[in-house]
Image (cartoon, rainbow, N blue to C red; front, side, top):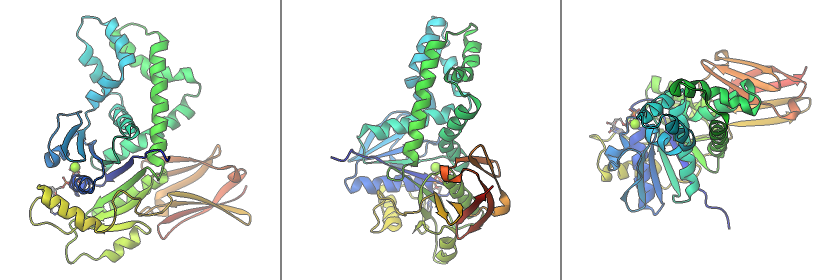
Length: 378
Ligand SMILES: Nc1ncnc2c1ncn2[C@@H]1O[C@H](COP(=O)(O)OP(=O)(O)OP(=O)(O)O)[C@@H](O)[C@H]1O
Ligand SMILES: [Mg+2]
C-alpha cells in the first residue's frame, strides 16, 4: 500500500494581497469536499483564526467537519521541543525562575522562529492525520526567510562548520552566557545534531513536488506583480516547486495575457473583487469556487520543474525557472563544483552534477521564464 502522503500547500505573496483569505477559503473548500485539512498560520499576526475561528495560540482546534486550525507560536514550539537543552539549563538554574528568559534568549537567535515553525510543519505532515496542510505565511520577506532557512543551515554546516563537533560552536556561547557557567558538550550536542537532521528532512519534504506546492497570491498591480516574480524566482533557484498564481481582486478590466507570459508554465487562477471584506464562510467558499472551479486544489496544478540539467554535444546546460530577474541582476560563477547564483541579496549555491566537472559557465540568458546557463569545457 502506498504510504499516506500529506500534501503541503503554501500560499506566499506580498503583504495584503489576500494570502490569509485564500488559505481560509481553500481550507474550507477542501474540508467541505471531505479532505481532512489543517489550516496552519506561520504569520505572527495570526489573522487566520479571525476567519476560521480562533484557537488558542499553538493549539490545534477543530473548527468544522474535517477542518482544524493551528496558529503557530514560536515560543510555545520552542518550549515543546527544546527539552534536552532546557532540562539541563533548568537544572543549572534551579529555582531561579529564569525559564522564560532562556526561551526568550533562544528565540532571539536568528532563525529560531523559523526553525521551530518548520519542525512543526514536518511533524504535522508526518502524523498522517491530515490529507492537506494549507499554510498561511507572513508577507514575502518573512516567508522566504522561513523556507530558505533549511538551505542556509545546510550550507552553513557544510561549508563553515565542517566536522560534527563544531555544531556546538553555534549555541554554546549563548547558552554559557545565559547560565554564566561552562556547559558540558554532550546534551547540547545531541540536541543540535537532532535539530539539524530534522531540518534536512524538512528541506527534502518541502522540495518534493509530490508533497509540497507553493502558490503565489498577487493582485494585478505593477509593484505587487514585480515582487511576486522575484519570490517565484527565488523559490525556483532553491528548488522549490511553485504550481499556481492566484490573481486576487482581478476585476473586469483585468487582462490575463501579460500575466500568463510572466509566469509561463504555472496554472493561473483568478478571483474577482468581492463587494465587502470576505469574512463569512459563505463568501470564502464562493471565492474558492471562483478560484478553483473544477480544479482540485489538493493536486499539483502545474508540472514545471524548478531546476533541470541537459547534456548535448559538448555542452551541458542548467535551466532554472524564473520570472522577472534580468540577467543583469544576476551574478553567476562556479566555485568548488558549485554554481553560485547571486541575485540582489539572495545567494544560492547549486551543487553541480558530475557531468559538469571541468566545465565552466560560458553563457547565461533568461528567456521565456527560464534562466539557461550553458557550460563548456574549461
Ligand atoms: N477578492 C477580494 N475582494 C475584496 N477584498 C478582499 C479580497 N481578497 C482579500 N480581501 C481583503 O483584503 C484584505 C487583505 O487580505 P488578507 O488579510 O487575506 O491579505 P494577506 O495577504 O494575508 O495580508 P498580510 O500580508 O497582511 O497577511 C482583507 O481585508 C481581506 O478581507
Ligand atoms: Mg495574512
